[in-house]
Image (cartoon, rainbow, N blue to C red):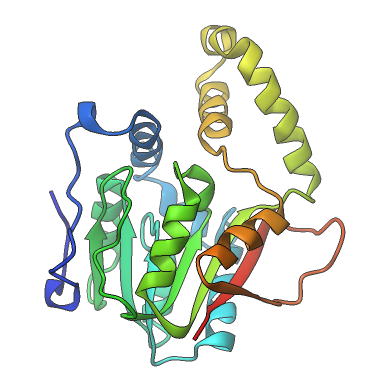
Length: 258
């Protein structure tokens, strides 16, 4: 089922991606979709006051407001249960929100009654977005790119749908944070003992194994910047500190070239 509101705002000359049958999806993309669909029922609680992800709402909104004040149009790419999308909508933005996980989108719609948000169902393994060239002022992606088969393709699409001088904000695992050093060791461990970990581990251990296996694009910040530059996106300084930072997620900002 495709979940769309206000489809007249989308580019109907480009494909609106419908979910494949499970068997025809790229294998890793199908696993990522399932990973997040399984979290849909409780995912939004992480954004509640005191929740593990509550700080993301303010972090992204302040970044967006500083670079592209409302009124402006923004896509929440990989929107999950729509928490960022609702935050942007309530602060005056025209919001589009897209995800590959249908249960996440269904939950997002349930939680967003009364708000004017356009929901877009993407297929797992998508390679194009159903927006015309230069349609949007901003794109945000919260912890999405590390799961994609080809993040360079995704960044080129984000660049294409941004207007000249438009803004892209995204978070990726921060390789300068100690927790990522531990996860790097965990990834090596998984390559050697994954099957045994599944057999002996609890459900929590298995979920962590799946997370480390699927969150696989753990690039340096310099490499993310290089990939973005190839997509005509120029890095913006967001005041990050050098060295070890207190946040395990790095927030990166880019402006589309004229």
